[in-house]
Image (tube, rainbow, N blue to C red):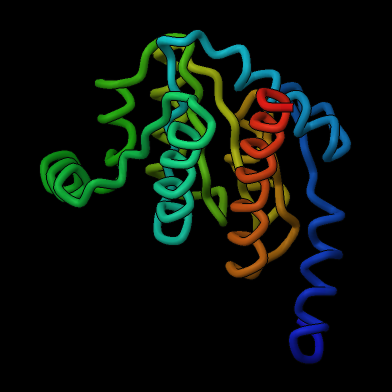
Length: 191
């Protein structure tokens, strides 16, 4: 990644400048335009609809953090399906590939937004969660990394792909994209 902290942050800045944003048709947008489109999608949520965050490991932590920030700071209904009892129950009864699919099937409503986060973009449980959300009539935002052709990177209405094969930069930039969305929405609302 470079030499020391300066090298790390220089590389992180270089990666952030190469984030690719696409829509479900594969159209490529600049980062600013992609953020604007994602913000428009979030701002189009009906007051009785919500954002559902899903992710594994570090992405689960981002999901939990951002779901709280979206509703507490942004006034936008949001939830993450990361409760340990939920995960272990669904994992035990249906298998781990279904830990997001089953709660999405139960709790998602048409018009909700699923925000799916996966560093690899290949996590089976995330992909099943996206399919379940689509079946329920939800819009989808994705955050992925590692390989540019990962399956998740083409499943969303808007897809943010971080071009790195290292967890640290991918997770940091996924988290920053979420904060960028929320902070910009809050700036618009309170501007």
